[in-house]
Image (cartoon, rainbow over all chains, first blue to last red):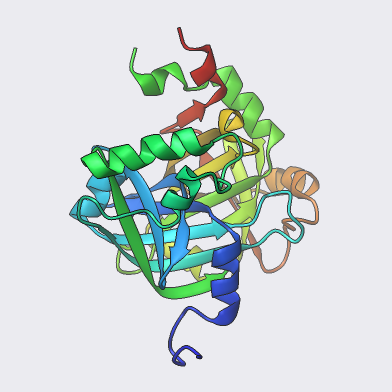
Length: 146
Length: 139
């Protein structure tokens, strides 16, 4: 199946998003200036999915104004280095929404960042279920390599 | 002491980290005030991150309209080696010849300064930093 012509998620974009998780999420502060949050972004179903503490600055920023941008990057030592810019809106999902792939990581699947294992994944899962952490997704309306 | 302060870098550590790295990720605002972003190589000198953008890039027009930016430099080899420095401030265009000549050598071919490229800098202000190695050293 091919995506519609105006869909920003081309095959090249989707392949890059499936292969890379290091993401810088850009949100707006109360005064309208930009700020940045390093994240792990999991691509699933046409959106980039994050989790964070409910009380974090990024969660509060997105609650106030959902406009967001993401730079998804290859490793800085990867050759050639590539960065994909996504622009769109992010939304905080209802309590209990699962972070894609977390169940598999709790069961022992590799984690995006070396040094975090299934114990860390389990703690994240518990905090998401309790509402201490939230899951957010960013749906891109534009995508381009920069 | 708050958890964030316990794992933040000291000013000399921030200095050393920014000197050791060479890529920044820049957040700025589009014409409607929504966040957008780009990336560039940089050189850290005299308390500024210097970088270039193509003079025809839409990002440059946006910075001339609203110079408010954030920038992040980070490393993530593994969880306890995560380090990052974030800045919040305003981007400034650099046009004086002496600085441009000095930075031409420092930035090299990765971010050439010349026709079609504009040199910019961000002062080291609004700094937020973290060093996850300090999580393991917390009492």
